[in-house]
Image 1 (cartoon, one colour):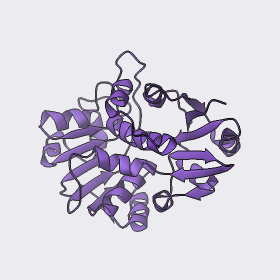
Image 2 (cartoon, one colour; image 1 turned 135 degrees about the vertical axis):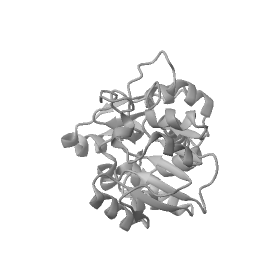
Image 3 (cartoon, rainbow, N blue to C red; image 1 turned 45 degrees about the vertical axis):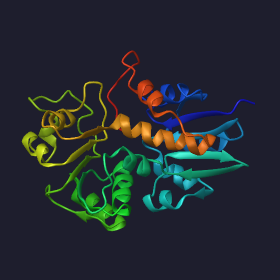
Length: 270
């Protein structure tokens, strides 16, 4: 039987993962999973011939809860994005955290990071940064959520932006360009465009074909900028390696993920 793989999400039609993994020769498909059916779908995948699956919004916490075995980092983060099916068991890992670190131009140890957001992707990013030796400040539009995340993971919740070396946007701001205004992203972010130039690196987990306003403002000011597609490639590479035991060709994955001829809706990171 051919071993298959896929990505679980709801919605999931926007995902670039199938193109990225198929470019590596892996049989890989979309696995739409409504939240009310997620608990039935996942246990059925192994018996149906699936070797593994990636997990995207909104199922990462539920995926961890369904697993028979988890890595320490997935348990610490409280979310899983990579499932492996073997011997009738479900193994859960989180490659978002090491994928994020691998995308950075230099290690973050000893640096100060400012993270916008307090959802699942923010949890992975904050855990990764703290584990790597960075000090982390977390801002969220709902302060209580920032405080909860910070207390869980050893960070600091802040009511307003603070000076930092690294800025990471883990919110969905920039996903929708229908807002009115000259610079829509910055109408919702607690930051002015000129202030972006004060960081030594900017990471925006949202990816758009034309770039978000935050990413464009960062690049215009000469700041090293990482977008969500690079992080998607990096975490996907780690999933591929865990499933196959082989390191993938990152350039092949990047080209497939950024193919201008493929459908390219805006998307939050997977």
